[in-house]
Image (cartoon, rainbow, N blue to C red; front, top):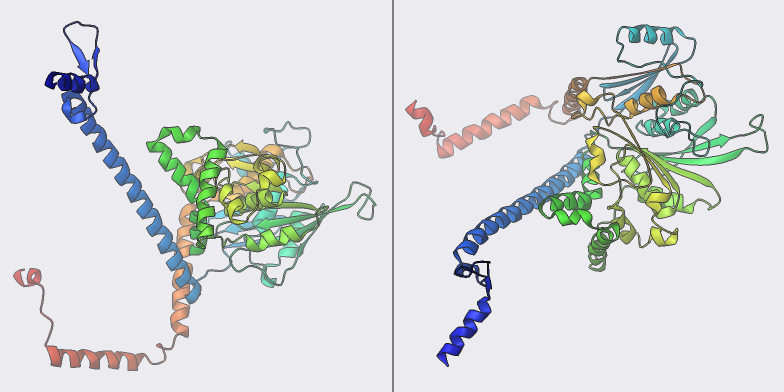
Length: 491
């Protein structure tokens, strides 16, 4: 009986011949029973521990950063530490100039002006720098050149996205800027009394006529909802970016440890992401207060037979893709992060399935995205639909978001696709990242000085100093003078 038990235990270990009659390889269920398995198993466990610790560290760091952004955004909102006119424009002789954060300068010149001749003369000194726009007889450089959506080129939607970065105040004269950018079309900004405080957006009404003039019977109206992108001075915008693209970034990090995640179909990732948010929603802890809520409700209330396009740049481009997918409207996104995977949570939170309602993945059917090489913002999530990739003219400054600037995208489109309406003769873009940091620092210092002057402490400065000296003297009399640290005493 003992011999049978011993043979049964040896049979469970399963001796398999290795080709040599005198040597056999034993596979043990317990790795500790075999020297070779014990060595490899120890290494695998160490690698697993390191991977788990790295993932936990990344998750904790992400949660800490998100909580810090939310906390600082609340403090900024309460204190009112906001900088106005980050993007502004001014008319110049022979054209118009747009300045972004004091570092990015976009200059557009009209045809047959001294400004256009000056820009061309400057460009001749640098053969690598493009300024003049190609003519109608020139061959376009990209496949998307020449395409229009409801009578508007891709550069037209980029210009509308640029206008949304400016405050819709009377001093900025946005209607005048729109007239300068679109002299060939009847474009006007529709004012809204209840503009969202979280995200700036504008409604453009564009009248396109195929006949002889604006009174022709073939004229049709187009509504363009343009969404602003990330404001570098608003902390709440950084928090919104983190919330919008949490899941796709987590999947990319997870795929570094488990490469098989990369072969998951979109239905699988949508099931996982949407399931998580559906569970959170059932537990009444769903985080569905997004910046695009007001715009989504507005687009949904528009008549179905009305031509509507949602557009935006950067974060605004990602929001436009989400709104377009949830409503079945056309979305034209300029340099967006993409919503290929993250769209699933918005469908789950908004209690709608755009893919079923509109006959298939809408992100592929009703979206146009323009991305640039070297733009690391675009790597947060995958892209769907019609995607045009272009070269970056500021590749040496790509780390400082040189390839993510809307002003550079506008000039690149004009240089390589031309201007079908022939509004402008030249387009010049200059970018100096250090100037942005200096301008921001000066603006913060000026704001702090103005806040200090308006505070209640300045008129009573002598009383504040006297009160501080009195309290210090009382503390010294009661507890004695503070002792110096041992380091200073020894020195």
